[in-house]
Length: 347
Length: 244
Image (cartoon, rainbow over all chains, first blue to last red; front, top):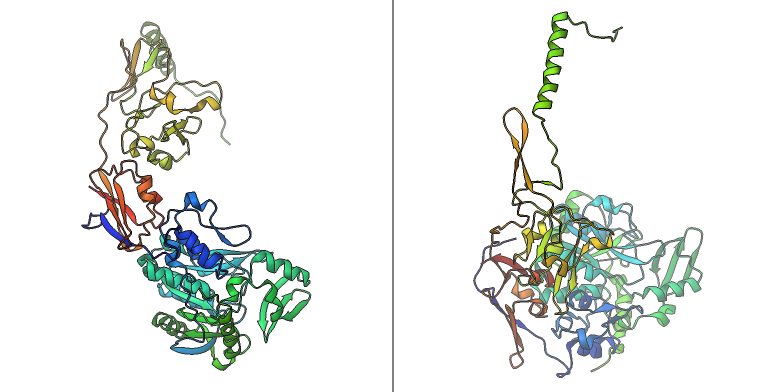
């Protein structure tokens, strides 16, 4: 499509980041500082931005086969990686409102407020695409682009999935396709990755309108958690929901229930989560989680003006049943994650 | 109930119809109306813009892949030549002769002919390689007469002329609108230089200034052929074609 020519768009400058090891490729820098240092959170921000061949390999780890030939040394991965110059964030963060609610339209694990926020933003005309994490019958994750509320009903989109999902590579595709904007739900590490992308690239600043963060203690590589839960006697085909309440992991199946302490997960805890201190996704527009409100309600932490507008809209349409949020209930998990600060390797 | 039988004509009517039938037969004997083209001894004259067998000029090709992208039948496959460049091959088993490839070719490397009667023995043979597309296919011409279809107010008739039609028309192909690539969002450029690598004409250049840690990207509109290869390859989708 032809557009009118504008002056000055034929020459431009791009700043390149500083290398920690000057005479090596940018990917080698990233590999040394993040992947090999075992601080990679597998948020896949680097994978989304890489113009060449950065991928997730069979072991579910970020990798770049034949990088010595293929790496273009542009430094994009280093620019966007939230763990390259890792500034750990913790606590509850700044917020405008701490509340709790339950969606009347959607059914979810608790109050389905993450779904409600994205779909209300879509009704408002703020976004035209929402990214949700879908799962198949064996709880393998995939990312689903939702454009109308009808698409939500047959899919198990809401509810916790304890396996990593490739949200950010899909987010980039969505950003390139969208006309109005994109809304996305993600774990704290993904939120940090999205913020980094927005900091670096105007296209993400313009198009990513609403970032819903989730309360997150940890997440797992699919193969590892699948094997672990199988050993514990969890049948994936019958699994209905997974949840963590009062320090216990509960896997509810159609005919049985498996319970064990969360601390037992320590052995399969991914290295990236071992150094993560952010429980409430402090960089998001709005954080949603189960802890800190009554059973069946979602805790909502509204942090930015955009989220506040959406929240006012939700209240106005009457799609929400309000409740009271209890910030003090979050303290235990916030402190639990803050303790992981000691695991961060010092460079 | 309606009965079906022979129509009830008067004697005068019957006589009139008999005379009419006999006169038509007599007319056909004297001046036969021949509506069939006697191919291959005769050939119908096709218009110069006929969409037939395609010819290819490697000199003009800039390997921009536009023909293979635009092809709705997926008939064009880009094959690597010994020189390292990619040239189109056409699978006539799939081709629907829409000639979108011709229309989209920015260099005018593809040209049309009026040849529409090429025979193949196998399906594999229908995949016409680049080398085979440079020269027109060998055809044995038996035709001595060109047939024009003439439609006047009342009837269609054929006009036969004793001449041999030129199957490769000498056309001045309309030149495309000159386009050049430009960056629409320089802030989102990651300076991966994929555009520079892919550019055939060397219109995109980059200088890495290690002292001030910047990459200076530059597009030379004069050199840009407007093939759009960089627009397609750009991972951030920030290049667009604009009128020169």
